[in-house]
Structure formats: structure tokens, C-alpha cells
Image 1 (tube, rainbow, N blue to C red):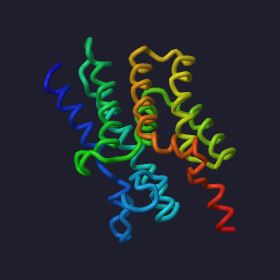
Image 2: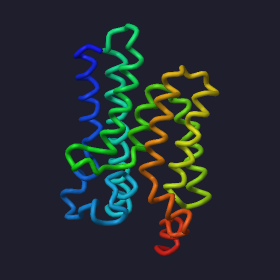
Image 3: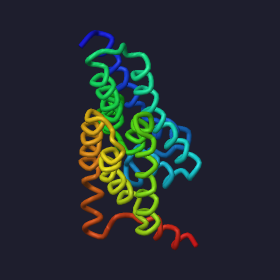
Image 4: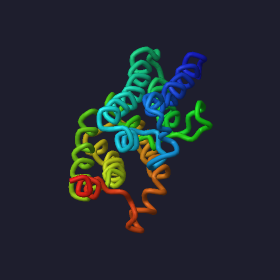
Amino acid sequence: MNMTAVISILLSYLVGAIPFGLLLSRGSGVDIRRQGSGNIGATNVARLLGRKLGILTLILDVLKGFVPIWLAGHFIAPGPQHNLVVALCGGATVIGHMFPVYLGFRGGKGVATGLGVFLFLEPLAVLYSLLVFVTAVVLSGFVSLGSLLASFSFPLWLFLLGAPAWTLWLAAFVVLMIWIKHHENIRRLLAGTEKSWKKKNREGA
């Protein structure tokens, strides 16, 4: 692997590690790492600071997944290691979001950033997973459950769409990491203590 590839992977990690949710919350006086779920992602930002900042965080987290792998796909020289380097750039971006060097390696759960990565690689599979996400959240009220089911279904959509093997391996890795990062949500879902958007909406009505 040449130096260009190594630098590309490192830069992908550093871009993925940018904590947009935390940066956007700075002017509010709210430390999103200490309130709500303590997560730096869009769901916690929306819960604490409102839908607009939550949506902006989501868009930026998706873009930081999309842009590095888009650049790698277009500018890494063709060759036997091209797909490997592109896959590693995608994986590094997600790992950057989950374990950001800027925040002592304590970051988000990688769903939006992973979505950005695969939006470049296989947008149709992303669409199918988004349908799973929306359906699960509408029916259950749990964003975490929607994220878990949508990510779990993603490799299946890739397989059915005939995606190349390296894309399936990347998806399997990202999904595994997403589920590991959701371990507390899984525990709360099983215990019946997970926060629900439906409950919040009923309380605010």
C-alpha cells in the first residue's frame, strides 16, 4: 500500500472524527455529552436543541461519510488495491465518528456517517434501509430500534442488489460496529426503559 493510500485513510478518519453535533451546540450553552443520551449525534442534538440543529447535524454527519469515500473512489489510482483502499477509507470515516481523536475517542454511533459512506457505494440499498428505519420508528417510537433494524437489513439489500464482495465485507464491519456502539440502547430496549419519541410527543401534546 503506497503513501497516498495511507494518507487517504488517515484523512478519512480525521474527517469522520469531526464532532459536528458538539460544534453546533457550542453556542447554546448545552454540553450534549453531559445531557440527554450523552451522544454527539443528530438524535441527541434534536432532543436537546431542537429539530433544526438536529437535521443540520444529520446532514453534516452524512456528508462526512460521503465526501471522503467519494474522493477516494475518484482519485485513488486504479489498480489491484483500489477497492481495498476505498473500503478502508469508508471504514476509517465511520471509526473516526465513533472514536474521534478530538474527543478522547468517545464519539457517536456511526449510523449517519455509515449512511453517507454507502450513499456513494449503493444508494438504492440505502433507500431500502431508510424505509426500514422509518417504518420501525413510526411503529415503535424508538429511533435506536430503527437504526438497529435498518443497519441489520443493509447487507441483505447489498446482496440482493448484487453488490461486490468487498462492499459486503465493509457493510458487515460497519453494521457490527454500529451494533456494538448501541449496546446500551439494546440493554434499555430489552429492559423497557429506552426513550421513545411517541412518549415525548404525547407528553408535549
